[in-house]
Image (cartoon, rainbow, N blue to C red; front, side):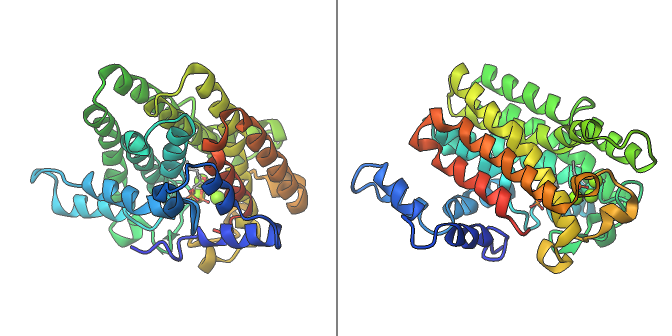
Length: 335
Ligand code: IPE
Ligand code: IPE
Ligand code: MG
Ligand code: MG
Ligand code: MG
C-alpha cells in the first residue's frame, strides 16, 4: 500500500505554512545527531516518520500469518481490517516514544502492532449498524459491508486476543511483556475504550450534555489507547519512571486533542479526503466538542491541548522532536 496519500502529507504542508522561510525542522534534527549519521538524515527528511511506515506495515503483515484452522473468510476479514490504509498514528507514536527515551525503535514494534490491532478492532465494531452504522472506513467499504455483519464482529473479536498473543510472544523479557499486556488490557477495557464507547452511544439518547461528560467519553474511547501506545513504546524503549511520567503528560492532552480534532473534521471535512463519512455526529445526536462549544472554540481548544502536549516533552530533549511533530500533525491533520 502507498502512504503517499495516507494523510501524512498534509502535516508537512501545514508546517511549511506555519514557518514560511523559517529554519526547517529537518535541519534541527540532523543537527541533533552526529555528523555522518545517515540513518538520522534519511529518517528526518520527507514526512518526519515516513521511513518508519514500511517497517510498521511489514510487522502488521507478518502478524497476519495464522494457522489453517482459521477459516479463510475470517482471515481475509481480519487482514482487510488491519491492513487497510490507516494513518498508523498509534504505532508511530509507540516508536517515537521508544526513541524519545533513548531506545531502539525496533524494540517497540511488538507494542506498535498490538496497539494497532486493538485500534483496528475498535474501528470495525464502531462502524457496525448497532454502533455508528458507517459504510466507509479508510477510503474503503467498512468490514461489515465488504463481508457481512457476523464476519465483521468475529474479525474484530479475533484482533483482541491476537494483540495480546503478539505481546506475549514477541516481547522477549517476560516482565516487560506482562507490563505491556496489563497496560493494553486496561486501555481497551470497560473503564477505558469500551466504557467510552458505551457512554458515547448512551449520550446519543440524551442525559447531561456537559463538557465534563464529553471529556470523560473522549478520554476513554480514544485517549486511553493513545496513552497506552505512548507508554508501551516508552516501556519497550527502556524508559525510566521519570521518562514515562513525561510521556504520560504528553499523551494525555494529545489523546484528547486527537478526538476533538476528529469531531471537528466530522463537522467540516469531506468524505473523500477523510476516507470516512462526515456530518454523521450531528445527524446521530452525538455529544461532540463542536456541537457543545462551536467549531472555532473546539479548534482553539485542540490547539491549547497540543501546546500542553508539546510543553510536556521538553524534558526529554532532542530525541523527542518527532513527538513534537506528531502533536503538530494531530493539530493540523485533514484526515
Ligand atoms: C479514528 O482514528 C478513530 C478515532 C479514534 C477518532 P484514526 O483517525 O487514527 O484512524 P485511522 O487508523 O487513520 O484509520
Ligand atoms: C471512535 O470514535 C472511537 C473508537 C473507535 C474507539 P468515532 O466514532 O468518532 O470514530 P470515527 O469518526 O468513526 O472514526
Ligand atoms: Mg463512534
Ligand atoms: Mg464512528
Ligand atoms: Mg468521529
